[in-house]
Length: 247
Image (cartoon, rainbow, N blue to C red; front, side):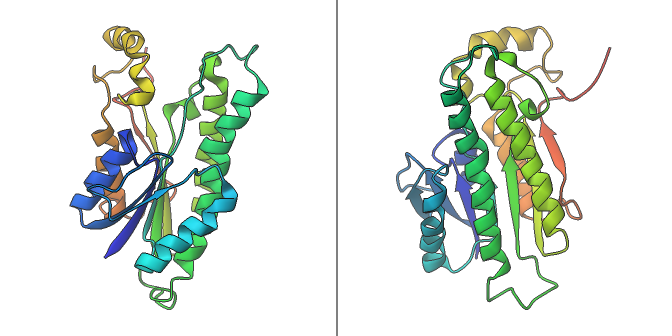
């Protein structure tokens, strides 16, 4: 039994990851501010990942029930409540996004990885994978949007967090990966659907369609099940070709 912990698991990419990982044999622990017990979750925990002080208690609940954590999917994240030009956006919105999108996941990863490395059933087995961590970032980690600067900055920081953890943990038995979604149709993007429909029609995405949460979930499953070995620190963009530079 392998246990996958998914933050922001109640909807969108997080829920798609839960369903796909469950179909691949993982026991699923879903964490979200608004989540109810239901398939495919074996355990749900209502919690705010930005509340760093509560993270130890969350991990204790998981360990008391299952005794191990094999996979962490850092998916929880939010967009600005209001899109504002970088010259006008204030401190409150900036701090909110940093806390939820960067500070919380960074320190939750720290606590989970320590738990993985100290797992008594794996601690003495140097030849066995002790766990993996997947950061869900965004193409906005490298693509500027001046009307939502705080989101871009938070995702750029999370991308570097993934690299630092991958560097530190290389050879430890804990692999770390970053997945960068492109324009994915979720509740977060539903409010700008018309805008992006037009952008897609005008060639923003070479593959010519919206991304779906399942596109991200399938990549998560491939990494989690070892289908992409020898790849810790990899950055995988799932964006329908937005990363292609062309004239």
